Length: 488
Image (cartoon, rainbow, N blue to C red; front, side, top):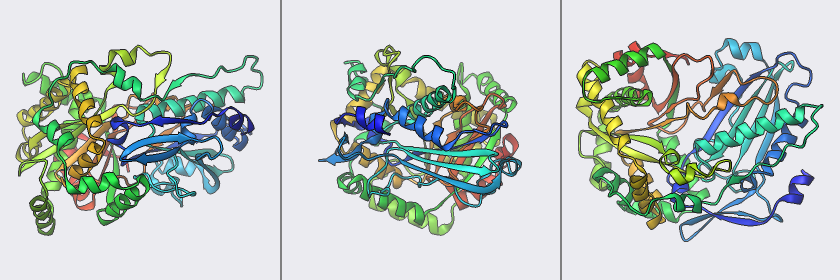
């Protein structure tokens, strides 16, 4: 701790639209580790010391989130640090019972997660930029390690970089025979590198993206002028009014290959990715579930539509596909070995009619059309298109709030993100890789995530977080049940 305090410097990091567009959400995962039989397995002193050593390379994590005139900053004041929340506790449950319960959320008597889906006030009334909770399982049999970071400071890529580096440092510190000092690595937090990587030529945004990023609303103005802490409180209240119900499903490699083959043989797309197929499957089941809402829900949706300027035409459904700008920006990719770990993701809208999505359950042609529409939209997202989104995100500092307001008032949607490529199963702290990585039991409504993929996984695990009535419909959806298996 003393070394960390000695080396940290006061500095300010200006945030941008890429950080704020997804700032309404946390990035929370629980890593389950099994003790291979070592008495010093992931000791408290080792985990904490390696965490502080890692923070030396990520000083931004000890900063305060500050907003001035709707523009955001992370202020690191060495005399007034906003240190990460770090907790540890002992569980009465043995690892073998957690494993036997397939790592389900109720395998432990108390939740491992210490935050909600939305960034909100921590112990000192500020939003913490890292939350860690170490739960030691009975008889030193294992550890459940919860790590959360808000989207204000990193995206999923940056989250994975941090946790992997912590694991690397921990492994080095555990090796008592090491002779060489582990050099400090350089990570880039200056958001200007994203701006500088954008091409000067911009492609115009399509109509759906224009509405998503440039449409203003009264609700958006109100959300923009709130402090991040107040906005978090408001959003948490909203999630309590419409609580989400979460489940994890498995989609086998064989199922993905069969569905991809159907789409490619249809002639509607020359190629589709695994993610295109998964997005089509998710869109189909959530759209059908939302369509099955009760009469009361339909009346509420009609009221919202009449009081706001809706994003969608009636009887349409929005699939918001989260894309990473990094691989589309050559200058950003050329920064290696330094890595930019700030926000660099956004959502691109794919709009289909609700009828076509429901029909996709029983029609290969309709399913192929949905998957190819995802591929078509994602293919348009070039560096010049990203430059257009960058312009929209940063031209109006309140853009993120207007997009958030549109999302809140658009129940006919699903947000789809893919975290399978982040290498989180590579996070070996010196005692073996995690056996399972889990999201929170409940997250945002109408949210889907393709979870991190382990070395022995066949296919993908998909996390769905939706309202209970939608989940009940999904669990009875013949198409979804045929192509997936419920994990828990």
